Each structure stands twice: as structure tokens, then as C-alpha cells.
Amino acid sequence: MEMREIMSKIAILTDSSCDMPQELAEKYGIDIMSFHILLDNVDYIERESCTNTEFYDKMRAAKGVPSTAAITPIQFCEKYCQYVDEGYTDVIHVPINKSGSSTYNNALMAQGMLREERPEHHMKIHLLDPHTYSMVFGWYLCEMARKLQNGAEISHVIQEFEKQMNCMEIILGPYTLRQMKKSGRISAAAAVMGELMGIRPIITLIDGKTKVESKVRGDDKVVPAMVDLCKKRSEGVEDFDYMIGHTNIKQVEDLEKACRRAFGKPPLLVFELGGVVSANTGPDTLALVYTGHPHG
Image (tube, one colour):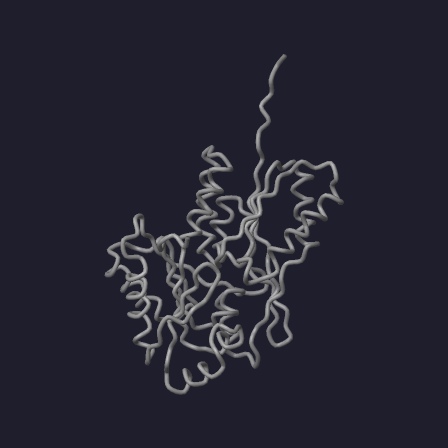
């Protein structure tokens, strides 16, 4: 009797919070579902309605601050049904950080809906919580896709991805605080004092949780404080790498130069913060992403 090998057909699905450049998404065949962002009663579809730079300018000029809506269970179910109909055996689905949105739970609900819509399906959905945002997980989704293309086992690449996410940290340096106040990352009082006195918080985002690590006075102190904190937190880390996120502000050049001096190597990537992420950080923010110690 002839034995036939059943070949896997694997999809990788994420959402626009990954901030992945379109050329990388196309190179690795990664599907990205877009969030809707509401700003001054105008509904923007991330990655479709306008560029990142245009959205930063809209935020700076807006009367209010943006709000975002989670991707719905119905939207996810429709995407899952499409994968089933196209013969996929596996879907690796990495949505936005579970603790920051209902999107992850909506994906769980969609799996139940899929069983009703396609009761005979045998597609396996690997739903992973990245515990973070932006290219912090987007970069390593590309790495996952590359390894799968080269024949790696799906269980192996998932294990590697989760191990990497357990080490990733972000340092944020916001130069304006309106969005930070709205999103609850700093208090209203701290935002008012910060704007009046030029005080800038240095904020970490680790395992989905934000913390104000220090405060500096004056815009020129932000970059040195970010780099010093990164050096401190990553001391002794093997295979250290870093990336730089930004909102097209001039200080990104200062951060890259300071990082090259401090770490003796270039960043893996310099990328723009997307609409969902910048809706929370504000339109004038730097992000230093790096490999830290395991979080436990």
C-alpha cells in the first residue's frame, strides 16, 4: 500500500499592531488584518486610509485623541473560514498583546464560531499571545515565516517565538503626553506638570505592563536616558539585539547614533510606529526595543 505524505499548508496571521513594513509582509506571506481608529469622528482603517506620517500629522492637529476598536469575532471567523476553504492545515495567529485589547479573546470566540460554520474542518489554529506590541513581535514573526519556508517544524518555531517574546522589552521616550494621559499610561497630573515644566517620563513596556522608570527635564535628556536604561537592563544578555521605532521626528537620528556608540552595532531595523501603537504613545515618541533577560 502506498503511503502518501500529508503536506502542511501553514498561514501566518496577525493584525496591524505589528507595524510590519508591507514589503516584509509580502516577502514572507504574512496576512495582516487592520484595526479601525476613530479620530475626531473620522474612521481610519490602519494601513489603508493614510500613511503613518499622515496619521501623526492628523493626531497633532486633532481636537481630541484617537480611540481604537478591536477586531471582531465575526471578522476573525470569516478569515478562518477562508483558510479552511483554501486548504490550510495550520494557522499561526499572533494578535495584539492580550492584556491591552479584547482582540485575543475575540479570536478565541471566532474558533468556536468556526466549528459551527465549518463543522468538518481539521485546521489547527495556534493562537499566541505576544505580550507586547509593534515590530517587537512583528520582526520575529518574519523570522518564524523564514524558518518555516526553510523546512522548520511548526512546533519548533512556535517554541522559539515564545521564548524570544519572553525576553523582549521596550523603552518609550514620549515628547508629548496627551495620548499617554488618555491611555492611562501616566496620570493626568503628571501629564500637566510634564508639559508645563518640560518633564519627560522614560517608560518601560515589559510583558504587557507599563512603568515610569524615571523622569528627565528637557528634550535633550530623553535619548541619553533611554540608552542608559537599556544598557542597564540588558547587561549580560547574550545575543543582544535592538530595534528603533519612531514617529518621524528628528530625534530618531540622535537615538540611532547613540545606540550605535553604546552597543557597537547597528539596529536590526528602524521602523515607524503604526496608527494603533502611536494612538497610545502619541505622535512624538521614540521607542527602543531590545533583548532583555527572561521575564520568568
